[in-house]
Amino acid sequence: MSPTFTASAPAKVNLLLRCGQPDEKGYHQLFTVFHSLNLRETVSLTPREDGKITVTNQPADPSQSAITCPPELDELPAEKHLAVRAVKLIQDTYGIKTGADLVVTKAVPVAGGMAGGSADAAAALWAAKHAFGLSVPKVELLPLARQLGADVPACLLGEILLGTGYGDHLKLLGPVPQRYWVMATNQTGLSTPLVFQQADRHPEQLAAELPTELSEAELKLLQGTDSSDTWTDFLELLENDLTLPALELRPDLAAPLAGVNALKDVDQQPLTRAILSGSGPTLAAPALDLPSAQKIAQTFQTYPGIERCYILQGPVPGAQLH
Ligand code: C5P
Image (cartoon, rainbow, N blue to C red; front, side, top):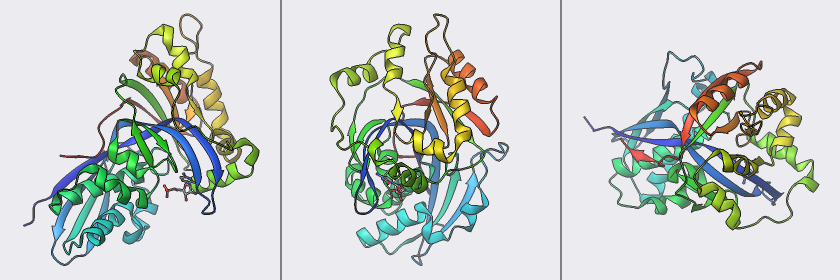
């Protein structure tokens, strides 16, 4: 029996997402900060001799109804599954004749703006590298990760990253303090291409030019220790240019955003700033401490349509072997 190789990769939230104009492929230049979270997709790979690649999806915790594998995922033809495409790309790139049986354990909500599919691809690349005995460092896998999707490099590297280009050219920004993030998932998914297409209907709101670096002041706020004195300034950093187009498609997201944004701390300062996670519909809000995170989660949960709140922490390592 062949040994099984298991790797995992993290979900993410975009703490900052500025969107530029689309190019001829319809893809947008981005200026974004990826912040990895301690919710991980896991891919187990058992080599098979005939070169074929199969995939099975399973929920991370079957008792949690919110983490189900939606039927769409099981109906997805295997060759379109990002974990399968990742292993195929490794086979083609390195001339590997061995195949793989993959088991993808899904913890990250599907179609939620937290890069669950991209994390599958990153974990599969890492499992395949080990299973097929390739002595390539992580950075050498970045061009392959880019071919699989704009968020896959960020899931491979984890931690906290500045993303430029399509969001797939990355620079490590750490170390930063561990922060709490409340992630409120939605009962109904939202298609990423549709949100970008909606953004294109307001070209005047897309940046003509994007910066290539964070300012010194922004970096200091990211990297500095959090306290009630600096928290409001840190919150000012958070923004997402996809919010407006996503709200046009999904007006129901406005109420939970406004409700959480109205929360105040004991000094009547904002408790948090709620933003769209990536292209949504998941909403995200950072918290200074666990009681604040719990209060934010309780508030999100009072709104219809919110499925589940995760209280997560990060940054965390990228793809790793188990
Ligand atoms: O790269 P990925 O397949 O994850 O992207 C999903 C969709 O998001 C693309 O089809 C495109 O519509 C949009 N996108 C974009 N610009 C980016 C990244 C993604 O327009 N930089």
